[in-house]
Length: 74
Image (tube, rainbow, N blue to C red; front, side):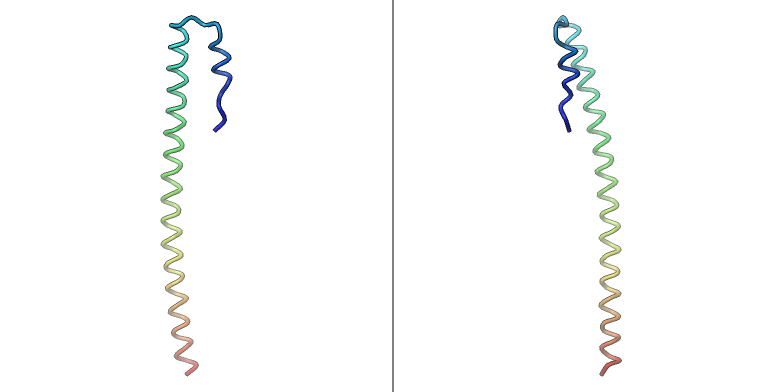
């Protein structure tokens, strides 16, 4: 994530009350971004879990077919 220098530039020359208020707003924005990224990460973990289950099932099917083919060849 790129640092947001716009906020720093906007705070130059502001009094301390305004600066604290602006910083709280910036922190809240970053917290919201983090929560959104955490939700996205959770969705990706769930997708990965599903894909992993599908892969395991396919691997089991391949092993079953290999076994069946082995029996036919004998």
